[in-house]
Amino acid sequence: MTDTGPWWREAVTYEVYLRSFADADGDGLGDLAGARSRLPYLAGLGVDAVWLTPFYPSPDHDGGYDVSDHRAVDPRMGTLAELDGLIADAHRLGLRVVVDLVLNHVSSAHPWFTAARAAGPGAPERDRFHVRPGRGVAGELPPNGWRSIFGGPAWAPFGDGEWYLHLFDIEQPDLRHEHPEVAADAAATLRFWLDRGVDGVRFDAAGSLVKDPAYPELPAGWQAGDPSPYSDRDEVHEIYRRWARQLAAYPGDRLGVAETWGGPEVVGPYLRPDELGQAFAMDPLYWPLRPEPWRAGVDALLAATTRHGRLPAWVHGSHDVSRAAQRWGRDGARAMLLVMLALPGAVYLYAGDELGLPEVALADDEIRDPVFRRSGGQERGRDGARVPLPWTEGPAPYGFGPVGSTPWLPQPAGWGGFSVARQADDPASALALTRAALRLRERCWRGRPAEVAWRDAPPGCLAFRRGADGPTCLVNLGDVAIDPRPYGSVLLASAPVDGPTLPARSAAWLG
Image (tube, one colour):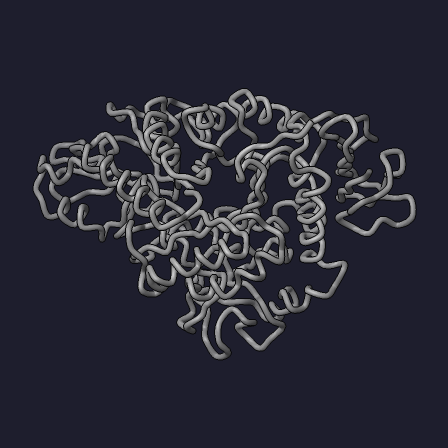
């Protein structure tokens, strides 16, 4: 029995962080023309879809996630015609295209917010945003004690006694989706990009679109990740039901995927039959590399998704977290890639993780991420995982842009040692493993039953099948090598199998 469905059900989607992927014009910033030129590489890698991070006009306070026009292309990134060409080329190569929609907030340079800033207290221009009178004699204190996800207070003053909410940077005021103009504009934005032929959309900050209108204080002892009055509220799902109806009106199984942060209880509701096709499973990024949390976590996520007829969307890495090689170690990152590719569901692979890129330690004056500034330097931010990719061994900037150009984030010396060119013909490289795994996955795992059947395994190990007669994925999370032969012959391993032993911190597919 096979498990079939829409194209995205078990797709591998490659996140192109545009600013750091490929720079065609030499201004130091990755762009659409650069990404378009590298599409054959992605097709050759074996992924199913490409997710493009924002390319919209933006002052760039948060890497393009502060959008001033949701239905245009930033001139630094290219043109609408270039985007149309990228989509057409991708489709000719058999790749689907997913774009980011940032609808929780806008840039402080957005016309709506410049009008709200210019208007006085109580003006209708401010009704599109979460605006409240301040506390204190003259409104000099924020309306409540909510904290920004990026650090510091979540409220900023207009200077006239009223304050606006920004769950992220101060330059990213949150929208009120209860406002009819906001709702209509979001629908128009979704329709605009679907009309241009994109195959799916990622809804950024998916759970934050609705806040408790009473703006209550957080309970005593609240910690990040606990239920909050500004995240994953029941009312947010009516918005996704509306957008799901828009997606369903287009041919080709258009995908809606929610950027969710939380466990099964958060992910599951977004996947009800009248809502979205996928919601990110981000929790595994932080599970310890021990069998117990992985076995329990996989079971819980499968239960929460399959009850709605969906499958998990496993996230191996993203621009919002440290590099896989940093989180899990070099060997662990390779092993967990094989595990995720074997599990039921889709997989999201972050650009550069197929090369095993390490996290880069940037100097304070090189960091652009507002998290660093808003946390007073306590948090280094996410730029260490955003350093532009190396395509060639040298000279700098290693094929990211023309020789002599300066990337927007500095690449370390010797960055070319991780390049596509260096790894392309090395059978032991991270790139070779990724290519082999993506091809073998089509034969071994994709379309097999959605259930995971756990097998007995040595201490410190996990072993599972999908279906009674399928291959086995064996992952050794312990500290000593094990014998994989009781599970079959090795089809693919994340590290060299020395005779009858599978090394520690490695995984293998056996059949």
